[in-house]
Amino acid sequence: MAGIKIGLQLYSLREAFADQPEATLKSIAEMGYAGVELTSTMIPDEEAARFCRGALARTRLSCFGCLTSWSDVQPAAIEETIARNRILGSPFIIIGSVPVTQVATRREAEAAIAYMGEVGDIMSREGFLTGYHNHDTDLFHKLDGKTFFEMVFDNTATDFIMLLDTGNTLAAGYDPVALLNRYPGRSSFLHLKGYSREKGYLAYIGDDDQDWPLLLRSAADTGRTRTASVEFGKRGDYDPFERALTSLQRLEQYLAQEGLS
Image 1 (cartoon, rainbow, N blue to C red):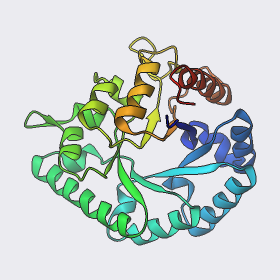
Image 2 (image 1 turned 135 degrees about the vertical axis):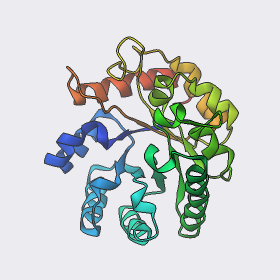
Image 3 (image 1 turned 90 degrees about the vertical axis):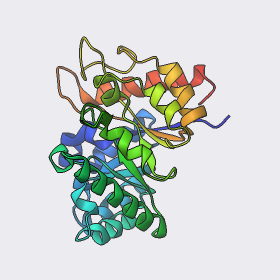
């Protein structure tokens, strides 16, 4: 049975990474993470991408991918985005979100989704996997009774990755497992985020509303997930490094329980 490799979305430790990038990566490696996922803001130019690649090699962390802004895949910027990610060594270039104001009407939404298909074709030719990462707004935002999330994945190719964010999905009132079942085989990459109705995004993985063993089993079997990034963004009364470690330790227990280590 194929397992799931767990990485950390560096946005979770964004302040530390901005201040001491290589020391932060070293700490992540020492926790036992297999790799990290970056955001496009962390590689604003080719020099930064080159530094990150070297730092990942020195700390023996894999690059799981790069979450990229909508503006960075527009025609004027996409070539440079590809160049930076090639230097970085990223296998995935995932669209992080589309501002709701840019898809306020059905016509705008359909145009944006059609362009996602074009981006997917370009990335495929260039040797990258691509897809879309959901925020809660993608599930709240409806046009003619259909969420923007549904519109995206009903109207893109099956190899256009559904980078499902478990916490954002729960926050919008949807079940991540149900969405994995609805769009099978499209989640080779996943975001693992805690969320509960009581604590919101401050809930740790394992102290939240998600059935993690069921989710991980469904992700592996139905979503075909092979890599996943722990992510937490909202700041509260916790140590981000401690939360990163605790999240990994709990996920390792769930993965072992399900035979997915």
